[in-house]
Amino acid sequence: MKASKMAYKPVGLVFGAGAGIVAGALFKQVWKLAGHDDDAPDAMDEGRHWREILLAAAIQGAIFALVKAAVERSGAVAVRRVSGSWPG
Image 1: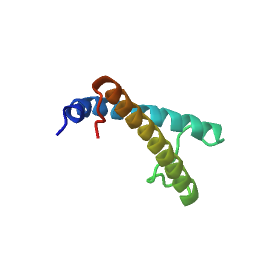
Image 2: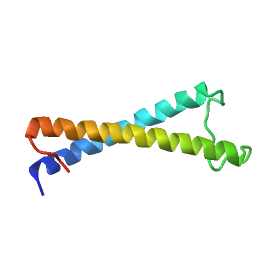
Image 3: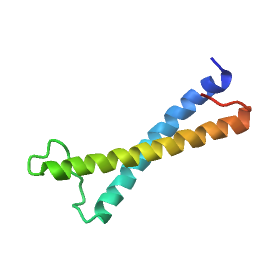
């Protein structure tokens, strides 16, 4: 295993956790801006319709994937700048 890949592992875990927090906060803001309730529906919310639950899940998944990809790519670029090799 490359040294840059090993060095990136703990950094990637911390950045991944941060990305999850950022994605969650961003989703809440997007959900509010879309004119929905303050709280997004959960799959177990009995009073919510399928359409609303699936829409919220799709938006949340897209935001999470976008933020995660941006954070991982930025971290890999930073490792390459510092170490000279790509961590993947």
